[in-house]
Image (tube, rainbow, N blue to C red; front, side, top):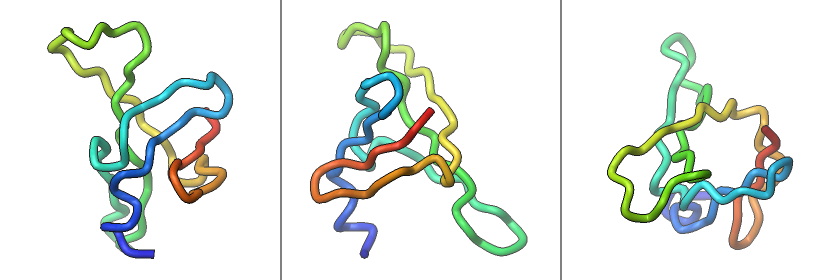
Length: 77
């Protein structure tokens, strides 16, 4: 799967049922020694209004991703 194919997928927390934006809103953290993806930094949209300028992020370990589906990426917090 290409990065361009997953960019528009929504990132959803299975445990809380919360939405964390699209994959394009996330940043990736890499392991410097082997180049593997270590974690994603996703926006924490809970409790924020859409007019809020402060963007909190949460670190999502790559291992917590449960499924990359057709329209969404599901992770377990």
